[in-house]
Image (tube, rainbow, N blue to C red; front, side, top):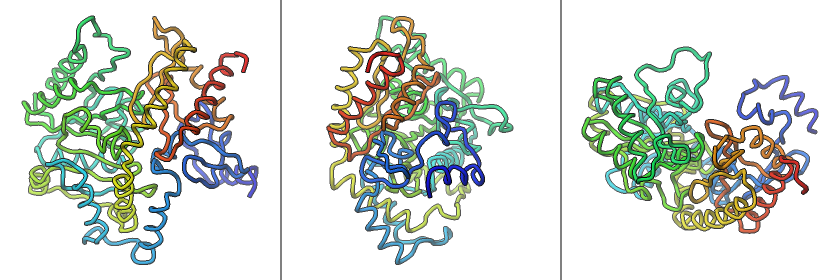
Length: 438
């Protein structure tokens, strides 16, 4: 099938979504045909460096051989099983997650996507505490189901009907743009105290939980200050409320450690995992302690989707974790991150529009501004850079409140040569977008 025919069929039979369509409509982008490692090819045979790792679900590298082998073996044995009963890959994946986690996070329940796992986390928190109110950061993104859209304030949009009740936004400690920032340390405590006071007024001081991403990814690759998370932990403990980490985009080796909480030194009560947990297949998890699991179960916790513990996806989940551990992919992420950060720092020295560089490991972003002093967001320029880079063979995402943050998530398989080639494409994109000689 050629491109024209494929586009005609897509127009005839697919419902269009709005993801990045304001920058590059799907019909103007590549139609993906196959992939390997850090590269995807379109149906015309053109290669692209995939610095978004698919939908961040192919971070192990496209068509990872271990995942492929397990898929073949498990598909010949059992692909689907009832969620009413246990199956062996489901049990094995729960054990594997417990083995790579630090106590007390050792009990898992499975879903199919990041949205599912975050809904499961909210259900666990509400059943375990007997309360309903949930706090989420104002720059948060936790999914696009009805429940998670309600706590995804960076993706809030009208026309979808009433949001899930008893959810409340609290300020994001966005250090680069913090209105509370002064000369002293600890400016991030101002949004913490304001946020908790607001949450108390909404909930009479009895929230069930607050959910955060250790790095607010879609909201602009905003790193949560460790002192903010430590303070949040203390404030929630005082209220008998739970701390939930959405580690879809930070967990399983991406930042240079297995999980982000190992960097910040603040453990959650519940953690969610998805993205490359299945090595490219759809599986997610909410992970918690024995004590919280027991409380939630005693209070009537109930869940289950038709495919939420399918043995095929759970088997690839086991293989994914084994791939990460056996090949020390957290160390590989740290090395990739250091190389990429050095390249970005070099670009920042040459181009004034790069106002900030953020993130860790294979999850990093650069914020584009028209003026470094005023920090005016370079929104239209970010879109132009994105379009130029896509045309030149580099895929990434545009994120953030002002859509001026370029987010890069190269797979663990990415070589230094590929990092340098992506940097060259990015620099050409910057120069093209600003009318400079290339």
